[in-house]
Amino acid sequence: MRKAYHIVVAIFLMVLLLGFSTEARACTIWASTGDTVKGGGTIIAKNRDNVSSLYTGLRLVFPAAGFRFFGILDTRADWYVVAAINEKGLVVVNASANSVPARKRRIATEDLTERILAAFDSVEALLDRKALFEKTHPALYIVADAKKIMSVEVAPGGRVSSHVKENGALALTNHFIDENISDANERMSRQSLLRLKRINALLDRPGGRPHTFEEFISMAYDEDGGSAAAVMRKEKKGSKIRTLATWVVRLVPGRSPELYVGLFNSEEKQRTYRVSIDSDFWDLVPRENPQERSNLNGQTDTRKKDILRVPGSRKDLFRVPDYDFRVRNP
Image (spheres, rainbow, N blue to C red):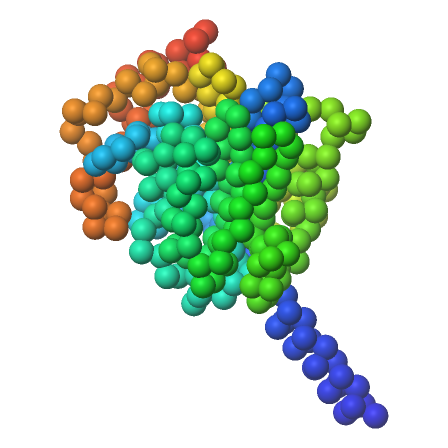
């Protein structure tokens, strides 16, 4: 009888392990636009979750051809673009499709986020080129401008599902939610399911009350009592995964985008920034200036500059009262 019991328990554990992923590397991305945003426009956000050994930096990027963009990049993972805004006001955030085994995800030949930012000025323009996503690796994206938001879910085999909204909100974590490609979820993460439920609950405003920029920032710091559903993840016993960065952008037609960034690198004090992305911002580092070179995808002419380390840039970029510069220590 005891032997039979042990066999049943072993089978149950195997089902759990096969059916749910223990992979916790994750991100949460969400957005709102139109009549669900107070004052109109769009708000888009991302929390980047990964191991503490990775380093997230702010960089102004000068593609060899195309639009400049500013964002958070993983400086220890081939300058991978985590989230960014280009000079035309297009924002892209991404998340790993961890419901797909790693061997099927590591097939990318380029950083598609970087390509979109360099080549497109609006969601509408990208709609005509959605075939781009069919040739990339499995991943999840939200693309936004001041008038529209678009979610894109890329499954193995070039299967793509996309949804565009001019009014409303949407969110993604680390698994496919569109029923047309949900069969591509080979292993489900409990944390991904719980975080998706949590962020959707936060987006569901009482009485349909529209979202504000400050509320989106607050959502990014939501710990939900320290539960596995927390949007802001803390390192816990048995897991080294935590939130490394927060990125929130407010886009309004005819106005300069407003950006909030939180960097939580383990090697330095927590840093937070709020800045208006206006013409002075983009002109802070002229295109003709010598820049730090990157070997991203072998493109040695792609220039990336940490504008926060340019002499005098902190004073120029975050000058008061035009800009609000805040550094909050842990």
